[in-house]
Length: 372
Image 1 (spheres, rainbow, N blue to C red):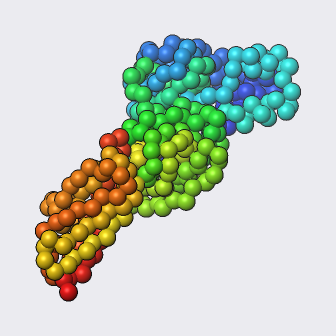
Image 2: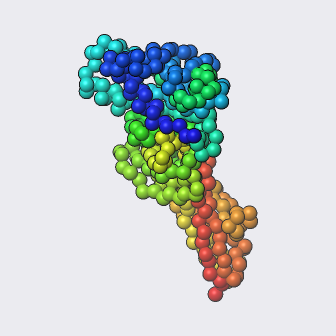
Image 3: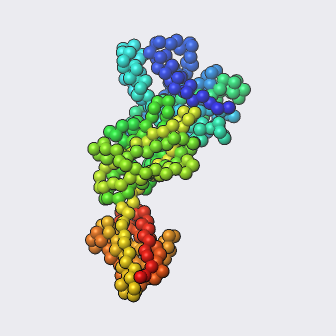
């Protein structure tokens, strides 16, 4: 059995209609209408109504991370969604029927599903049984959805953990604009998700310390059309290259020192929400190289250009980079090696550069001819 996660969004809209007086509470779950408040950092014991629905809310007093997980579902299949986008003032306006139609429509547009988990297995599951949720200061709603038949069979009780976590590397919704982008630390793996029913996109901000290659590595829980685009501080979209292997994606772009924004988007086919992991790091710019293989070993030269002062330049004899021909720290943008290790028959050398604050560059392969 696969839960219909779109019911969560429909149910949430119904909840808004209830508190605004547009629907009768008698036609829906009384517990859902009340939206009981619980405490963050606790295990919450709840009950589903006869239709398999439940709502409650909690307040985050600061920017922090929550670990959301099931404690006991009593054999029932349940999905949980954490939703952001409703304030106490807006609830008051809804209850007093002082909110305009335009404000109500805007409110629905601002609702964000920030996390979704279930307790199912195999293809029926979204693949996420625990979620690390980046919380901003404010009020959040948690919505539970099950199946009425299972509630009748196994009972309506369930419990979930809203544990506080020290995990730092998560997205903080809503980060769907550059202005609200989640700031990333380079080389750290971030947890994120896209809610497709709400046309969700995610923005991240990356600081690049010097010229190089910005590399984005991502993996998804499910098969998806997953895309990462990179923009500079002036909103210019950069040229990129992307490779895909299964559910793994790598996007790279040439960058200079500055601030860059990563826009994550995609489509997971029939899935309501897609979980992903994302890491950003910067590689030293790939150097250029030329080889002079002349008669007499004293005349052999390897010239490497396009490096920066302080870069460590290494020349290898093999693609696996096990056999070092020469190594030197650059004192300018050009490094010249004198070597006795080139083959008279010709061959290849492999060159890398490494900045002390960046990853090693991509490898530059250079073919040189036999001695004439």
